Image 1 (spheres, rainbow, N blue to C red):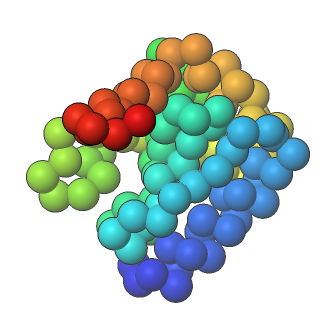
Image 2 (tube, one colour):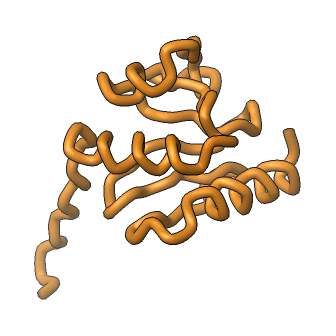
Length: 114
């Protein structure tokens, strides 16, 4: 998938999640990483589809999703989002997933900086 298709998918994902406070994305290497209230929940990578972190909650909402690596050399598999068309269910899953998502890593200050 190309950058334009990934951009179109990002816009669709953001549309599906509109109205849910705290959702944002950051472009990264031709794809996008998605955050909910500053915690990473998924991304768009080489395949061009939305992939979701594997948690007990995401497994519950998407039992038909088959985990896959988001890109060659990735350390962890992710789940293709099989409920993207169901706006309500997608939003519910994300809200339920929040407590199980890792907190953001605090950046250490460099010596001499305040």
